[in-house]
Image 1 (cartoon, helix red, strand yellow):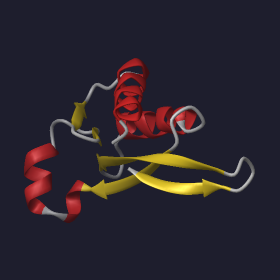
Image 2 (cartoon, helix red, strand yellow; image 1 turned 180 degrees about the vertical axis):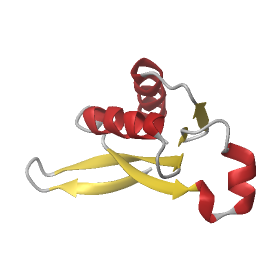
Image 3 (spheres, rainbow, N blue to C red; image 1 turned 120 degrees about the vertical axis):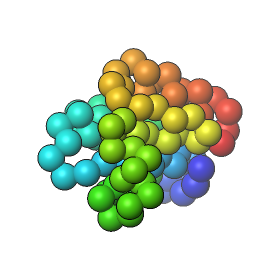
Image 4 (cartoon, rainbow, N blue to C red; image 1 turned 90 degrees about the vertical axis):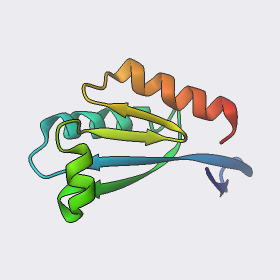
Length: 97
């Protein structure tokens, strides 16, 4: 997790680090990104997207399971529901990273 100063409230906001394994044309990946955007206010996070086609090992590993989302030590694989995503973010948020 990363932290930054919230100048409006003068408090520290903890960002959850999220990695989304994706590729062009993946509609389920776009759905997951949309869900993450909706959850941003409740669970502040920093999203890193990795295109699996840029690395043959990643492509071999994830080609049939994208989107794959890493939230802390948790890994979610398609199909990912908004409920599962929220639960993973809540768990990571509660653990403090």
